[in-house]
Length: 221
Image 1 (cartoon, one colour):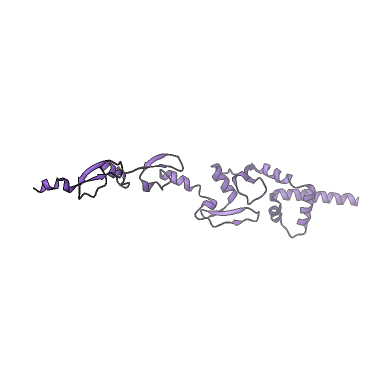
Image 2 (tube, one colour; image 1 turned 120 degrees about the vertical axis):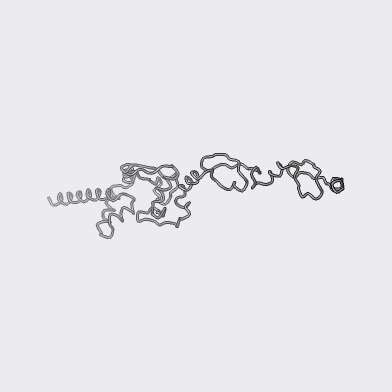
């Protein structure tokens, strides 16, 4: 008797599936709004077999179908996540403190507890290489604080010296040497002012000193 009553039309209702739109007759007391378990799972992303969305790995580009709440993850694996962390240098690092300007006019920032020149870090990050020992990262426009990758190039020490020396004329060298003779500036100070290595400055000063001595000797004769 009870079963017959429950099977009557009075105790049934028609629903429209919220996923596929199909109509279905269900018991009036049933709270469901789905026509099948398949449609139910589509609307339950956290369950096995539930709704999936596409995610692309930021590093390797691998495409995966994941649950919606996993879409915020940028990487497909720990290896890709660790590779991404290696790019977090300079102002992209969570430990970035702003750094400081060196005596030579370069910006240095702290990475993994050690200060390194920012323009070298930027070049290594953008080019994906480690700058070999003996090579120098040069600022093309002469602005040592412009560390954009377009302004940086890798040169040998000799190429770097030739570029900077070519910018200083003989008369300029004489003025720089006269400034040094006042005793107020060291080779390091002058190196920072004109952007030329101290060893190159020492050689040029020695040459100027020799020329001045030869001129004085010639005048006495």
